[in-house]
Image (cartoon, rainbow, N blue to C red; front, side, top):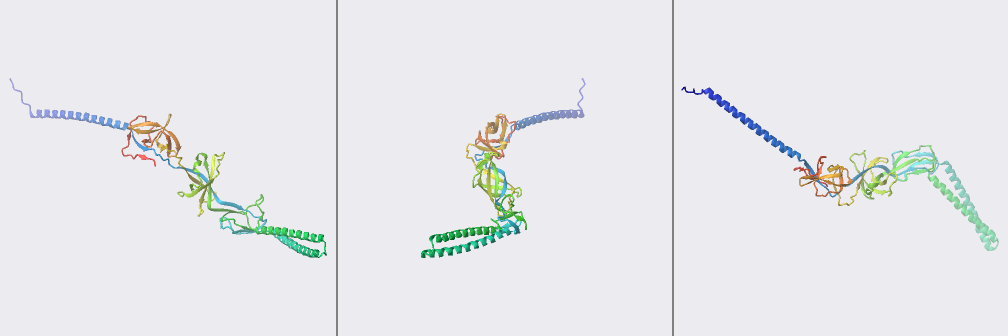
Length: 391
């Protein structure tokens, strides 16, 4: 029987290589399967975690914010008046033009009144005649009274002279009054400023014919405005009339002065709602020492609505609201789950809203909830998120 030949070294090496390759292949397959299982497990865990939304929360505020009303207003001079002539004639001279600052009592213009001057001269002459007649009547009455006491004239003659004296005395009084009237009219030849202010209009010139008074044919010589303090009138909607409290502070802004606020005071209102516009006319007075606020300017009046004292209500940011067909809702976090709570909305503050019922200050309200959020859905509060509380 022949003996099996011993394997050659080359054959043994090939067997070892094949075995090692099989082992490496098996290990690679095992590791690949293990890695895929780990990846699927991690993906499932991540998917499960992603399915639970992370939310930010806020606690409702018990004190409502001040509601600021911004209303358009019209700036008017505190005092504004046209200045008419009280005497007819021709303009002799004017002393101030538009934009000039004047003080009370400053002479604005002079008027020539030749007809009035003639009437005054005649009135003085008539008064002198009446005074001369009175002196004669007085002398005659005194003489007759003395002669009557001696019995040289009759009582009728004495009484007649006395009546003449009394009548002449009345005539003198009448002539004096007429002359004083014309003297006063002559004083109106000079036009003075009635108060401190700015000349905003000059409607005449030297030589112009002036008609006295403020009738249809007359034209104002000047227009004078006092702007050291200005009035700003605004129309407050009926529903916001609680913001109008006499003596309350108000601020005024103009587009002309960005970033600048002028402090004013609510001084009065009409105390009646306009049935056409359903608004209340309110006057706000603002000190204007530097003259920045000009009459006729368009301004914005800022008024603050007072707190109505409703302690049961709270306020939340507007982005917490959810609008469903059942009505407004907010989502709150309880035991790691979202709960949709029906609420009753009160006043709208713009970025915030008043909630009359449905919430308490201890509730954790979800900010900016997803539209797909359902009642009872699991949620996670952002660990590092700052839980906001309304001021």
